[in-house]
Image (tube, rainbow, N blue to C red; front, side, top):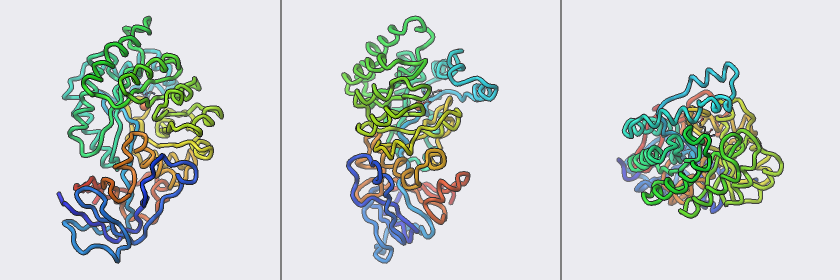
Length: 416
Ligand code: NIG
Ligand code: FE
């Protein structure tokens, strides 16, 4: 482990000289200054300086030649479900034969399928699998992550999931934020007693999660066939009493009022937004709530993409994330998210990078230390292979572009 690391002769270093204090919106989202032929110095895991290569310091414990390469902040993936017990490619085949995500869920598949498997899995086995996924995405360039519970759906299993997330947080080389998603689906045992399950969340789960300090945020799957806006409001108010801010799933399956309930309850983010109209776009543009877009979910489920271009042009703060989970997005690859954001949502490469880094960091309240190349922030950086430009990254959507991932004092060689 080197105490000082010097990157030399980088083709471009994408930086923000002053750390933005709010998520980037409108034109600011498209501004990502590039320093060409630059050096960047890391000391004790933080960005100590950058500038023209001619002014680079002479010595460092480790010197990396970044000629022809780009240097970017690591991705900040603010929406994932990487703790799960089994993949669900059987349902993928069912969808190829014509069933919809909702029809599979109604038959007891989907989230309930994952819950059955997770309830049977040991805590150690869940940790091993999730640890493997975490290192997979770190090698894809992710340098900060949020992970949700929501496949437990019983008091014991939700706590088990959150303990796995805590263990990941304690062992991972990147920051991990934990979100409690007990309201992911109504479990089978409560099918005819919805209120009973809501009470279980409020009276049994939340107090214990709070006592054990297991979550940073509360989430609800506020959508058709899952939880209503009224139920969501009730749960967010309960979460608020335990100091948990909201980051909620809305408008993936239908335009059913999720954006409104999120904004009213000062949600940090409302995520998905595949089914929204002018009213929801207008509401987000005047609110502090971040709209988190998950284009690899829309791709995999073959549903409409969220209107990313309209959201940005109207003034909403948008972030990009993967939604890595076994049902709707079995992929944690942020580079694919970037390509889809450009190709399907018409973001520029600069907008997509800022939405996937800085605005993602804001959507996890990690912006003080992560999300941009700014002096003083933690040096979580991507060094690309030799590539001609920033636009080449989303453009060449099938290639692997990352050579190294720098996490403070540690350098992971991804492709050499
Ligand atoms: O974000 N929409 C709700 N939750 C996940 C999918 C969960 C699952 O299918 O297992 C999502 O798409
Ligand atoms: Fe999700």
